Length: 236
Length: 236
Image 1 (spheres, helix red, strand yellow):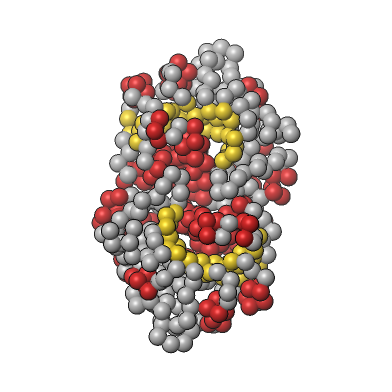
Image 2 (cartoon, chains in turn green, orange):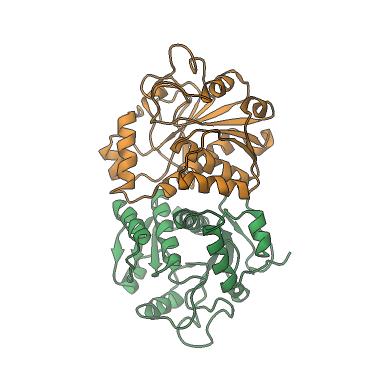
């Protein structure tokens, strides 16, 4: 069965619908999205492989998912560290930050140095609403993630990739191929260019909504909030 | 190790602190609390034992936890049915109700009839803020839960039990002994009178907060949002 994808425009409309007629709050959706990401990291990088998870957090909702994932990972026994250089004055992001501070999760300013002592990286910089150019200070961060041998898990999109077209032809991100991708609710078209481990997360979409947006609720098992859909990312 | 308990007053103060200096929103806490309850039901009553879960929902936050649990159970493949006779005009509860309607979860008015075709029951009527008398229409519901052979999972407290003293000496609830109890964040003193399967859920408390309120974060394992703490409920 071919896996249907959700364009950037459709993903934005779905998010809007979930939070209007779907009656979800952003707190709720972000909690479940971040929980999904934490479960993927637990699977692909179990505790015995090293507890130090570096989370690169961007200024929007993708970053918020990363903050939630870091909190859950802390509760699982990991030692997350957060790089969060651009912090909007948004109440939700400030609260998610405070929750991490209360767990004594360190926030760092120097990404390349932090990367040297990381066992795993979460790319929570940009998500499905990204387009155009990568702004400062993120080009160097994405470059570092592209060059490191530390495995990277990207949320919804490898940061800098075009949501439809995939990796840029040149410049920042053109050589960025994370080991793991977590697509939230449904894969975006860029997944066709992704060759790592591909998971779908976000077990909160009603079948009627999925049908309306023409994607399939993936075959989650048991209590799992995530499901792996094959390394090539195109087939269930 | 003896399990420390949290008085009704301390539990209310903890909730308040989590939502003020702890920076959690009620949406977030209720999502994680309800997720914990759903994981307990999945463990004690796996799908092959019967999918029909009847959820008795009260007018407050305990009821909200029940609504969230019903949603997650639906995603796991159960067929929840919700009895929700007193619905406050509270935005959050209305949204949680809508989320269930979108999943085509039926709401029923007649609890005893619904109980006849249930495989498991969740008691989400009253929680740690309960005291005094059980008001209509809940006495007959609690009586039905006390008399049925269908296993019942209670959230935080068997409804009608005094949070400190346990089951009432006579009248409604005096013979109500649910099979399963999920204590959220920490057990309440009534747990000393409970003899079923006891779980703790709500994996979101920072160690510093637990220390301040003089309880222990229980030894959660792996990705679990819940942990069983022994049938007698007093020892880890």
